[in-house]
Image (cartoon, rainbow, N blue to C red; front, side, top):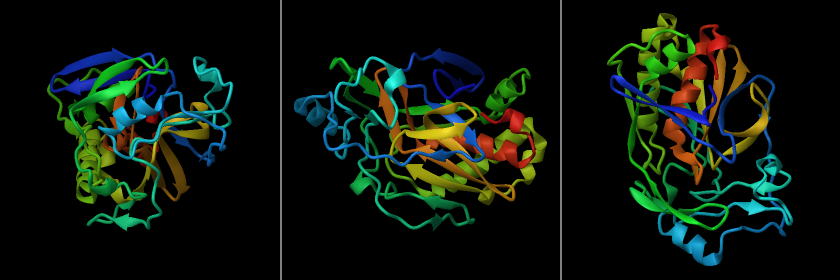
Length: 281
C-alpha cells in the first residue's frame, strides 16, 4: 500500500479507509541502492502563492517557504513535478546543519535543526492554506490513532485483530523530541511483534533516523523515482536509515509529520530486519 493516495486511519477496534486524490503521490518507500536527489531551485523559480497568501500561511507556520516552480511549468500536471521543475514547500523552513544525536537507548537521530523549530513546540489546531488555484481552505491538525499491529496484519493479508493496541500521533508536534522518538520506536516494535513475533528480538537502535525538511525526490525505490514522505535505506549489516519529512500537506493530501511517517518507516525497518522484504512498503 502506498502512503498516499490510500491512507488507513486506525482507531481502537475501527478501521476507516480514506481515499485521497493527491497531486503528488507521496509514498513510504524502501531503497537498496536508491538515494535522495539533492537539488536546489534556480533564482528564476517563483511561487504561485501571492505575497499576501504567504503571509497568511506564516500565521500558522512562521518559517514557511512556499512551493517554487520553474517558469512556464504547468502546475496542473503532476508529471512535471520533478527536481528540474518543482521545489516543495518548507513548512518549518530550511534545515540547519546538525550532528547526529542519540536517544537515551542509542537510537541515532539527525534532527537537522527541527528539534527546536525556533521555539515552536505545538502548531495551531486549525489554520488556512491554499491550493494551486489560490483557493483558501481550512486545515485541521490533531491527534490521530494508528494501529501498527493492524497495519502489519493488513500487509500480511490476515484478518485485523479487534481492539488492537494503538499509538497516538499528534500532528501538531513541531519539534522532534528524542525521548518521544525512542518511546515510539519501542512501542512500534512491541505492537508489530504482536503480528510477527520475530520482531520482538530486533534492537530499535538498528534504525537510525533523519528528519528531512519536506517531501523529497527519491530515486531507485520500490515505487520508482518520485516524491516521497518517507524512505527506508539499507545500510548493510541489518541496519537501516529512516528518512521522514518534518511536515507536509496540500489541498489534496492529508497533513503528515515526522512522527506519522515513523510508523510506516519503522515498519519497514522491523520487517526488513527479520528477513521479510515482502512486507515492506
